[in-house]
Length: 317
Image 1 (cartoon, rainbow, N blue to C red):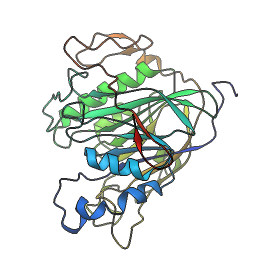
Image 2: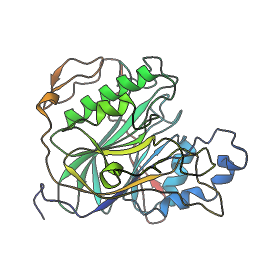
Image 3: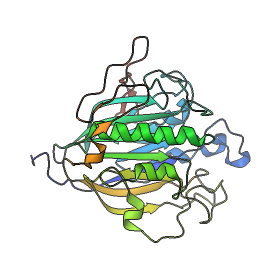
Image 4: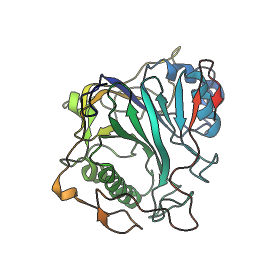
């Protein structure tokens, strides 16, 4: 086995806002898309997939279409199956899931359904800590959906996320999802700091003008890029793309998936300005210190939500 800090062989990551299955989108409603979108997602050839806006039935439908993947994630409303998920799917032949959990963007991040700062809905980040079977190295992956209505909620969530990424240091980290902000927004500025995170797409396409990721089922390239795959300095980007393919002339969602081909490069060393981590509702602590236990009366950050598929696509506990 290679040493844990060796560069890995490339793997493919995809983030995709699936569009929630309760929305009335006429011919683009989930009742029509469900017949083909899960297989379309499987056909993207990713090793790590993060979805947003997936209700339980949607998360299971995509999982059933995948082969040899484990899934992590819970419903944002109750920490079980109610409400939208931000599920992660991990190809098990390449990665082993060591830990997994979900935290809420709020002043009580371990409390299912908790909200703060004027958010319209509970907002979550589902995460996994992975061992790369190609190298033995470890890394963290987070998948999120920030609030669409409250800028304060997005800014405070960005601060909470940044603190979490520092907590995960020095291991590499990948953060993906629907951030609900364009590239010039202060939310991104709080995350794209030296030594913290970079945008994998812009690392490959720094001057691309056609970077729209939300299109409302209309297609086209005009508009904001609001879906991202961000990575710490311990991750190298070899390729990145916004996927705009269709199926028989129809789009799989009102967002385009974003993909990145990555390798990890072992432990990272962040900026000294990020030495201290501050999470709303938690005591100030050094980034190298372990996160505190969940407050009494709240749910731990490691709910039993990891399931896998065998060769026939059956979900197994």
